[in-house]
Image (cartoon, rainbow, N blue to C red; front, side):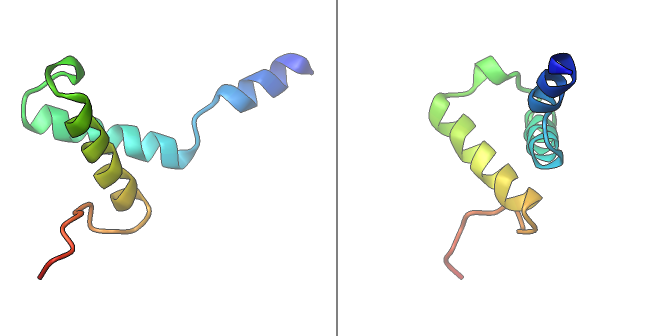
Length: 64
């Protein structure tokens, strides 16, 4: 039973999988690996991926 619980806790949610997939798509489209970008850019891309996966456009530009 403990093993089943541990597996359920460790399994990423659909949102987590969406964010990771979207982030990887961005890296692939620019032919980059995760270690080739700065921490600030990585955080920004994760924020945009989170926005996209929550039903947004994936853009964080609030001006018109």
